[in-house]
Amino acid sequence: MWAVTLPVCTLAPKESTNNRSRILIPLRRAMDSDGSRSITSSNDSLESYERVESTYGRTDVFDFPKVELHCHLDGCFRLETVIKYAIERKIELPTYDINKLKDYCVTTIRSDASLEKFLQNLPMFLSVYKGCASAIRELTLDAIQDKAKDGVVYIEFRYCPQLLCTVAENKDDLNPLVEENPKERLKPSDVVQIVNRACQEGEALWPTIKVRTIFCCIVPLPMISMDIARLCLEFKNDGVVGIDIAGDENYKTQAALQPHIDAFQFCKKHNIHRTAHAGEAEGADSVNKAIDLLSAERIGHGYHVLQNESIYKRCLSRHTHFECCPISSYRTGSVKTKEIHPIIQFVRDNLNMSISSDDPGLMLTDLISDYKVCAEKFGFSTEILKKLNLNAAKSCFLPDDEKRELVNMLTEHYY
Image 1 (cartoon, helix red, strand yellow):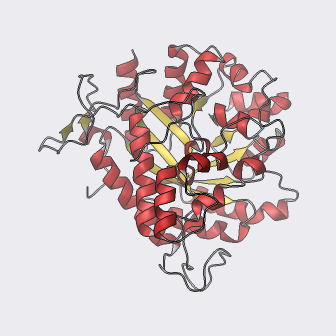
Image 2 (image 1 turned 180 degrees about the vertical axis):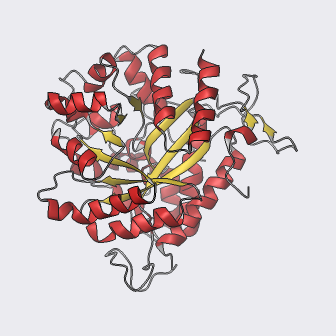
Image 3 (image 1 turned 45 degrees about the vertical axis):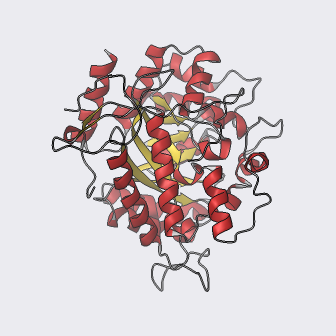
């Protein structure tokens, strides 16, 4: 069992001992007045909980171990790392001043906010990581360290390997984003191996956190979905626990959705878990489609499910887990500030849901900021937030034995 103790200590990765015991405490992260993150410079195998005894990352507020299920790895970049690799790789950015570059992040709530506007600058940031093994490794390590500082003990990062590669996996690969003469040849599987090794490295440096990954299909890129599904199977025993689909949820015809359906059914056949973005940019029907056509076990966001009572009751009765991201929901325009946030109703009705940060790098925020919104704006008590973490643990994509260990560890600490 993972022993959860709370000594007062200093933060720094400590050399491991023979009994695998390590002690950590997180760096204090400065927060801007609006709750945004201030910018500062910055094993051989994945281990199960029972093999690691350590404290979780301590935080100034909400000081309890946390579980996060909805966080995009490629949305976890640090601006100082973006600038470093842009200069090193001679990639043009609109500015190399870190404070001015913040203007290209989504740090305010616009009256005309939309998912499209939210994501419009993401390709610029990703360009410095695409096709660069060292940059992808650092992206992953930065993200793991930041989550460990937030007191996260288990996280499922999601990303699309095809967005970060430069060459095709094989001659039948239809990825339209490959490059003709890349400086560094990285296949999608190479990207996965880089991320996996970085996850192992991060777990060794910050052993309070366990990391798993989910691969994302992209709605406008149906031609790569089956390739992503096959990668899920190939790396099923190497830290990859599920498949997702992200992007515009407005599937105008089932024919347009069919390649994604095929990929998800392939994963279901091979006992690979499924989650899907739905009810964020589109209405409640997208949640139904995610469940019926994609066999989704969890829903990413899902706020608009309240627009249809029968679909909402269906999700309640089948205990479908909703991965909710409060700050992101406002900045994508999924929820308007004048509305009562759907998450409040979710909690009142005991919907199976949890709290995540979505794209903390793109928003210059962190998971603690989302917890602050829940506490200060929605009135959630610490006990409610702990319950939502238990929901996340019970709905995570770990194997049953590891899931039980995680739930038991949280329960022991909380109560």
